Image (tube, rainbow, N blue to C red):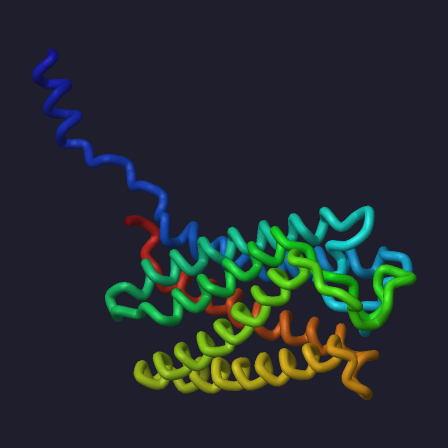
Length: 233
């Protein structure tokens, strides 16, 4: 009886393990919509906060600032998982720079959550439009943005080149247009937050459009690769 049981156990293949790569890519599908929904709802319920004028980062200030702080950290962790998933999914093609740059963007989100921005454009109420002095936390927060946004911009064009090589014309055009829009939005919003005349009152809108455009691309890319990846490892 023991011998028969052993033979049957040996002949039975092990149950397939959940695909780690698919789970990592799923994190990328969740990250963008969750981040955007959170800051939209949070911004709509804050007194004296104007989504058209104020940056998303300013939601981390004030009594309920923990909401946006957690939002940064959760999105950063989910996006870091996505970067790892992209590296695993694209490994046969020896793709390195794209996932690495997306990983830099993810780390930037984590740093943005760890270090709170300085007040800008009059929020919270009673603060000056332009900071009179920069804190260490604010400088680190802004420094993370100055690295993360350009890194993601370059990632769009790295993937553009990849899709051109694969003759995926639609994805190549979409990636290139996303890169151009993301770069333009980052420049306009940064100038607005720096109190450039004519851009201040819409700087928050420019930033939101920039974030939505970039995160939508990441969400769709994660979904695209996940749909093409096997369900078992």
